[in-house]
Length: 186
Image 1 (cartoon, rainbow, N blue to C red):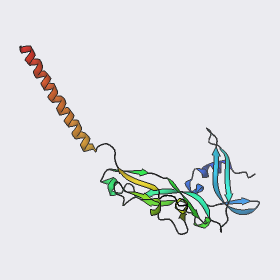
Image 2 (tube, helix red, strand yellow):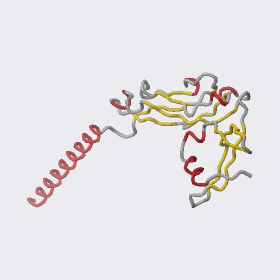
Image 3 (cartoon, rainbow, N blue to C red):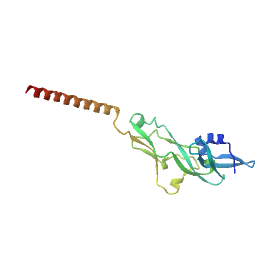
Image 4 (cartoon, one colour):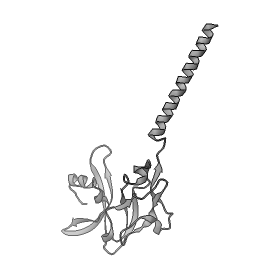
């Protein structure tokens, strides 16, 4: 059994890089390369109950989930000027690589996307020595992020709809007043 400092472990688990990095662990005075594979938290306390690490060899490929970092979302013309909304379909991807090639994260540039377009797994710029585990198994090319037209109308359309309904209400009120006047004259 290995004992870890609880406070330090809890702080490290809050960091994204801790989950997708090769870690150095001192075991019996020797440094070992390990990966965090799983951990278990107490249901309502901020308490780590169990942590699983896996030893890794520098010469054997590993399979690991790596987080995606989406950049230039707010600067994409379709979002900034076209009223599009960015839809994150996946937040991480499974990769196969040697431990030394494992990236902390993979950047996905959304800056050139137009409304209705998406970026799929095959379009990712993976670092050298890193390949998609899903595509390597013959899986279909999954979408990662897409820009869609915002639901509902724009603010201008909503304002014109409100004006039109106010005009209808005003016209129907005038008609009702005219009808009352005609019936009281009779």
